[in-house]
Length: 111
Length: 113
Image 1 (spheres, rainbow over the protein chains, first blue to last red):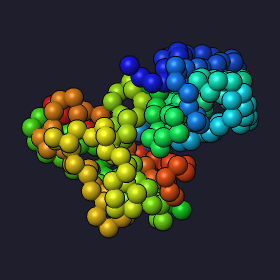
Image 2 (cartoon, chains in turn blue, red):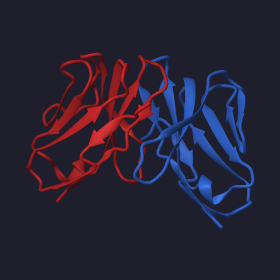
Image 3 (cartoon, one colour):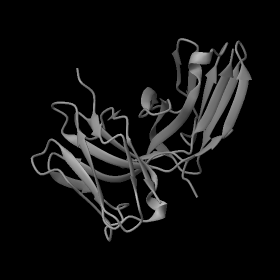
Image 4 (cartoon, rainbow over the protein chains, first blue to last red):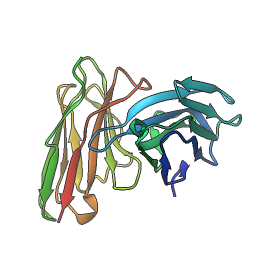
């Protein structure tokens, strides 16, 4: 059982559509990060959220940390083929120093 | 600035054989991490070094896996003997210090047959 559950596991959409992916846990995280990983590469950090209820925007990507710091969402507006990849959430659990990853959402954006 | 380097990129071995992976972190980064990413899953931390000391190796299968970072720079991860379930991508990451942003290398894809 993973500490961080991501949904959906797979998502295939057309260019221009909007989408939201979720990261949920029964545990409280001191901070939560979102990464994107492309085939044959390591994950690349997109954002870190620290405060419950925090919302961060990165161009067409909007990240939200739940009020109770147990969940997070990533919303992409007007998806583009370049957004294709594996989106991973990861968190530091209970102020510890070990980064725990979710299983990821594999996104494919078709032109 | 050069990123995290890993080699080899791909390795195929038979079960019960040995294998070693090498990682060169970003210059000046004190903290180094090894992760295992099984197909369809997120990365799982195996071991974390702070300079040349081990900070956390609670998820490292110590009966077959070993890792070292002797001079506090490069690191090697060894598996001896390998099992089929060790097939995965092994990612190395480094950060300026513990708790700072982690930068990942491209990984080594290991296939055990």
